[in-house]
Amino acid sequence: MTIQKITAKEVAKMVLHNEELCILDVRNESDFKDWKIEGNSVEIINIPYFDLLDDISPALESIPDGKNVIVVCAKEGSSIFVAEQIAEAGRSNVFYLEGGMKSWSEYLEPVRVADLSGGGELYQFVRIGKGCLSYMVISNGEAAIIDTSRMIDQYEQFMQEKGVKLLHTIDTHLHADHISGGRALAQKYGATYLLPPKDATEVTFDYEKLEEGKDIYVGNETIKVQPIYSPGHTIGSTSFIIDNKYLLTGDILFVESIGRPDLAGLAEDWVGDLRETLYSRYKDLSEALIVLPAHFGKGTELGERGLVSGRLGALYKENPGLNIQNEGEFRKIVTENLPPQPNSYQEIRQTNMGKINPNKEEQREMEIGPNRCAVHDK
Image 1 (cartoon, rainbow, N blue to C red):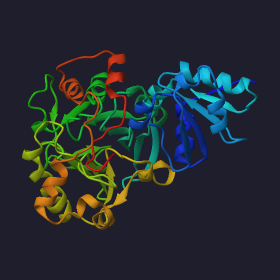
Image 2 (image 1 turned 45 degrees about the horizontal axis):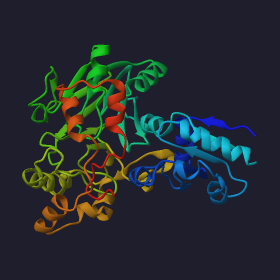
Image 3 (image 1 turned 90 degrees about the vertical axis):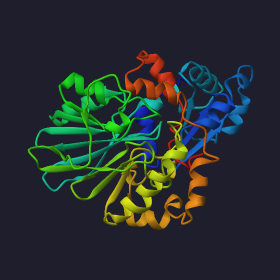
């Protein structure tokens, strides 16, 4: 029997299309509990590699008969060894994840959101292994990317396929869970990099100020990208209304939760801003707007084709974070008993400020694990 490799792209498409998957994760229990491959149709088993070195039978007993199995580890090596042992025991259709969970963390799946009224298109890039979401607005041969991840080659390939020129890269706020690729991509293509000035007080580079009242246009003014100041997750957090239909909320509002205000160590200072944004500023917007957040926390938030979205009016009815009427209770919930902070979040913030310049492998290590930007994510 032989084993086959499977790419993160192939696994992502299976997860997003709700195909049944059986995964054997051979990382240690603590790493598995912290972060794993999730999806509506994913059956996942965790048996640490060291428990299978001398005896593969625990894996054979756990894998359902007749099912394809994908063996997963941190980098790839351990999964190849375990997959080979399973195949040698007589099982067929045994795969290993190429590049391990590192490759899973870095894959971006472009999902078409909609055609826009001026003839353009809006895409959501789902970083399924990290829970990060970024966006590309395309119109009349031009593009803008919002909340760019550091894997800029994947956006470059997509722009080449679409035949568009990069005009702007935009960060809704100074990120603490992942390293932004916005500045690097803008420099490479001579585009404008925009960042909220209240989040940029310590940055070491030049940038264009992202401010309310300064509309951004893509494609000969066909699509209006309208920024709205919406503090709370950070003091500079800025949302966007695109084409008068789509509300890009950054890390302020998610489909099933709300953003946390503590990642700059200023939770007590920012909790009031968070409540004001969620319970007043957003409340004044049209309920028909489609919310497109910068993150998701659970596989249940992945909708049709993997799109993460929700109508604003529906979120005001269903999202627990939008239904805490008592201000004291709200303050307590978003400042106490929060999930652990993202891995290396201080170093990630410093990288995004330009204060430190870790190499590619160091950046990978800093980002390993879930994003943990929401109040209710576990």
